Length: 152
Image (cartoon, rainbow, N blue to C red; front, side, top):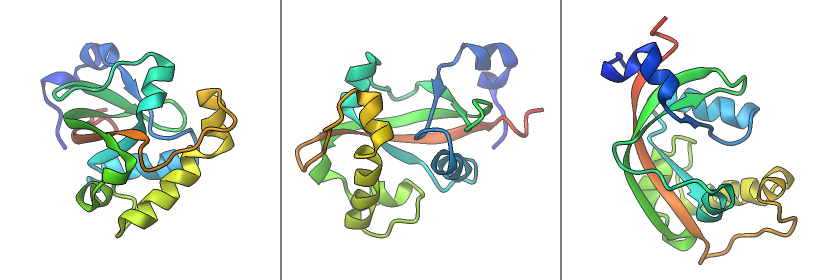
């Protein structure tokens, strides 16, 4: 992607930062998928936004994606947001997450491992946290605006 009016250093510095997963191999894979264009959607827990006191993303909002070393690597723009029960996540959303899942069941199993991990439970300050069909999730679609690795 090429840069546009949102890519000046001052503009980028004023944008909120977006982190995908926790630092490490999973974040590295997700960031790579964003940069190669295969990841255009993501799923988060509504309770995570509530716990952090963060507002839900809105269509048109932009943020800076950071890698595992907290370096800015891309600017993305939200193109859509839905809050649905976990049981209503559909295959097009799953495929657009760019993680190679070809079924909702496979996608869900991987996400449940992440959401039930010690790291996630610690972040939520709930050692027994679990999800079920009714758990509200935030489905976000986005597009890559600027690959900051190319903007140097």
